[in-house]
Length: 322
Image 1 (spheres, rainbow, N blue to C red):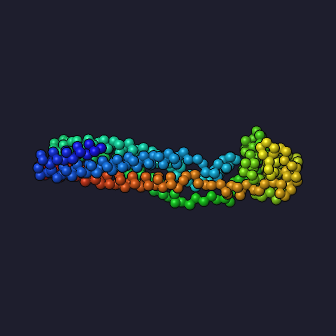
Image 2 (tube, helix red, strand yellow):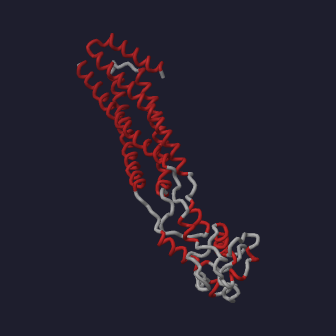
Image 3 (spheres, rainbow, N blue to C red):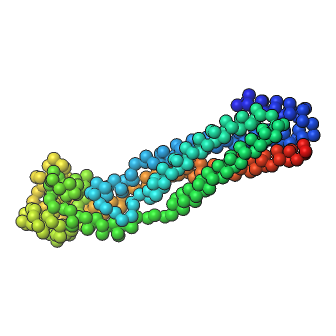
């Protein structure tokens, strides 16, 4: 890098001694190229930070609430994770980061080539002008994409997407009434088996508190069509009884699942669901993503500004030579 800048400076000195009155234009051109090289190098580092944070957001694990709801195959109308929209946007951020890195790496090499050129012949000046125009147009186009993604990102980050627990409660109740067909964890019915495992793993029962023999299971196929509830040997699933595990729930006391005596069964599952975290992306990762997008736009504006100035300096030099 130092050698490149030395070459740029030596090019300036040689040009100054040869070109006479126009040497100040050539010197300013090389200084501008020097500044652009620095900006492009910093832009490449910014692009790497953007790529890294985008990959993290893309591969982030589901939030605790989503994991719990997916376990029982619940089809929720609104996503339970707070920053899910940003996670879905992360592929776009990743693509932008890769484009930024590749584009500025190419520009960096081209700018180094410019430092080696001597500005005297009109053909060389025209070639440099065309190159400057391409750089300005390309960088400005990427800036527009960057700006659009930054605005969308900030809107999603600032949006307060609180979980509608009333709606979620209704959705859970509907899913229970449609899918609960057996109190057996090894049932061939995957959804019914999932509910039973959910009751054991989350130490809860039903959606609302069980108040007695009349409860959330009354309208399920387990009670209305076929099952131990339908034949009245159970009023709540054996998996709802306190202290049972996957290995011993079949031996649950009848005072729990049949008589539904107070204190023998678990509390409702809705309270357990409310305790689950809705965050799936750390705030510091969002900060890195935000700064990467913002800083890259600032650098792109500087780069386009400098390139625009350099674009007109050779033209001025051509007029002076005439």
